[in-house]
Length: 400
Image (cartoon, rainbow, N blue to C red):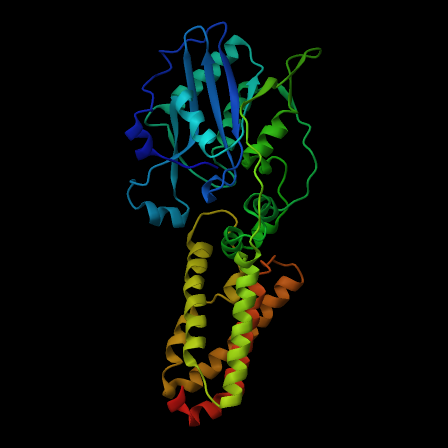
């Protein structure tokens, strides 16, 4: 979902100071849902949803955007990690909204809502009430409460008490699979997301839940019908048009930049170093120290997210078995000869943890990114090698 910076918007002066009392729905006015296709940047990968009000008679043309956050809010980064990021509803002119997507070559589709004049006024009033300073902020949740689900809920609230007919298509994909479909299954972005996602991300998402993705939302709502009475049924949308066309691009994949290539290369280098150490009776302690400290730092982040964050899908994360915060301690005391016995015990525990996470991935208890496997294997081999050569290492400590 698109993330627009409040400070950027304010500087451009495109926030609209209006209230529900200043806009009365005219006979020619329409309310529609705007869907923007994914862009190239990481925060654009999922696309965006907004609501538009346009009255050609008066020239009022506004976009209601639930995808705005403020970098300047107190403790922004701390709150972001904890999942306590507050987004807000912004209102600005459509003429200043659309060019952003033309510049990044995103397709923008408009679906005009099939509403009575009274329903249009009700929805517009609700949006402006939501835009009041005391109402516009909301606790953002990537999956369950975002810039796509908010417009959906506002629209469907119009038909409270009426029967709504859904024709949701079957697609038994997990949250992880849906995210991978937009980020690229083999990308570095998905590598990082898979590291943060826990077992909960492998749950099959219901069709209602998949509407956190703007394009999916657009597709599913296009099939929705509203039952007004026993004999009258109407489609939720009465028309659809493309406001901005996407220019076809030739996508090329540089396989040398894929995570699986990088981690496999790292595994190969690690194996060559291990072979050289065996042959020359040496030990490059820095290799193990760096591996353990880096995975330990990653483990601290995973531990914090798992136990203290309210982000969805990051709980029960078995990546903690190989990205263990204790690895930092092992990577440090590795340099202290007197603590070799402590390292011996910890390396033994690490071997059990590394083997366990490989089993977890093999049986599908939690899906592991394929690029993780070379790293886990390398950690496993280095731990085995240390235990096997520990006594020899004690005698050649000066070479470490």
